[in-house]
Image (cartoon, rainbow, N blue to C red; front, side, top):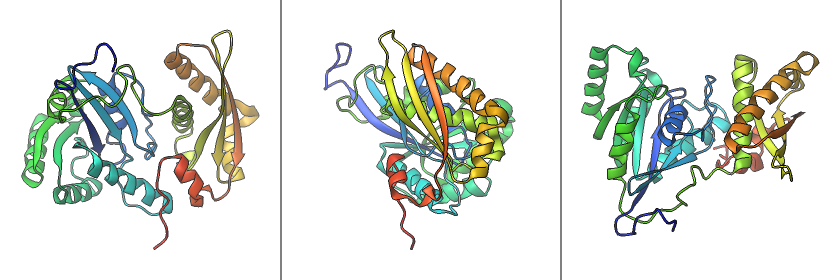
Length: 307
C-alpha cells in the first residue's frame, strides 16, 4: 500500500457503473470525475466500446468508474456485444448511475433503459446531465418522474462539460462505496494500458474529423510502443476499416486527413505522457472484422453467438 493510503479499517473502495443512452455524456462525466482524460469523448455515437475504468481517491475512498458503452437497440453482432457489456457493467458494480441528457428527456432509448433499470437489483443513483442548458421546471419534473419509477438513492444535476455539480457527486459516492482496501495504486488513474489509451485517442480524433463519413466499426490498434533514450516515445498504430472506400476517406486527398488526425492525436498523447511523441499511422482494410471473435477479445467484449 502506498504511503498516503489509509489503514484498511478506514478505507473504502467500490466499482461505480455509469449507464445511459449513446451521447448522454458518460465519457465526459468520467473525465470530469477523474480530473483527467481516461475515456474518449466524441460527438459520433457509440465511440465507447469497452468498460474503461477511471480511478480516483476521494478522502479515504477509492472510486473505480466503469464507463460502459451506450445502451441502444442492437442491430448487428458488435451492437449486441456492446449492449451486453453495458448491462454486465451495471450488474457487477457496487453502485449504478443512470445518466440522462436532460435536454432530450425520456426519449425511446432512455425509456427502455429505465424499464430495465427498475427491474434490476442493486443500489442506483440518478444523474441529470447538461442542466446548464435545460429549464429548471423541466429538470424538477423529470427528476420527480424518474424517482417515482426507480428506487434511486440520490439525484444529481450536473454539467459534465463545465464540471458543475460533479464535486458533490464525487463526495457522495466516496461515502457510499463499501468499506475495504484499495484495489489499485494511489497514483493510478486508469487500468487501461497506455497502448490502449493511445489507440482510443487516435480513434477519437478520427471520428471527430470524419463524423458521418466513417462507420463506428472502424478501429485502431497500437502495434508498437518504444521509449527512446532521449525520453521521447515512438508509437506505430494501424487504423482498420472494412472497405477500400473507407480507407480512401481516412487517408484523404494527398494524405491530408491522415496527417491531420495524426497531428491532433500526437499533441494529446504528448500532453498525457509528458514527453515528445513520434506517431506513425497506417490504414488497412480488414474485411469482416466485425465477425471475428479475436477482435472482440481485444476490445474486452464477449463475442455474441448468433441465436
